[in-house]
Amino acid sequence: MAYLREVELKYKITEVESDVIGGDAGSSSQVYQLFSDLQNETKEKFITINLDTKNRVVCFEVVAIGSLNAIHARPMEVFRTSIMVNAASAIVVHNHPSGDPNPSQADIHFTQRLVNLSQEMGLNLIDHVIIGTGKYYSFFDSGVLSDLRKRSGR
Image (cartoon, rainbow, N blue to C red; front, side, top):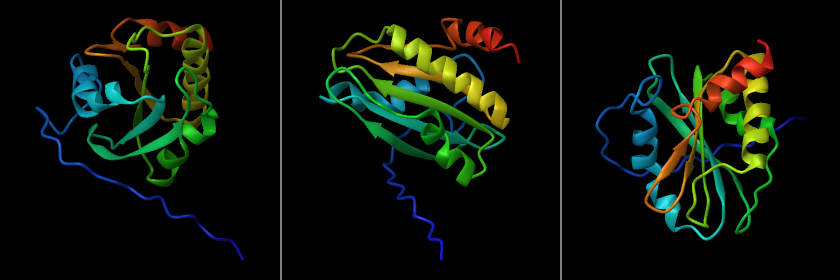
């Protein structure tokens, strides 16, 4: 007999400029607005935001909680809920407790793996946002996400 573990979704009421948060300039600022409380965390947290075909938030999941300066998550765990809710797109976000939102080489490498997997799955990875103290870094806004897509050759 197989059991499906329920996904617990916790919601907080947060007012944002729009219920659509992806696919255009400004979506990273909305992600930062929604998850800016991560800047106060003492451990890294990795979150996947799942979106429908109109880039409206379906749900989000805390995929992994790490330590002060590291986190371990497998790419397929990042998109597990995306599959379950039949998401069209996803945005991933994590924090740097150091306060510096600039990506490490490990962040860039992991994002490349996410790009590869999302393309295989037919899921649109819109952005990877890193939250620091009072600021954030967007792989989409910086053009790095586009470069990673080109490297994947798909």
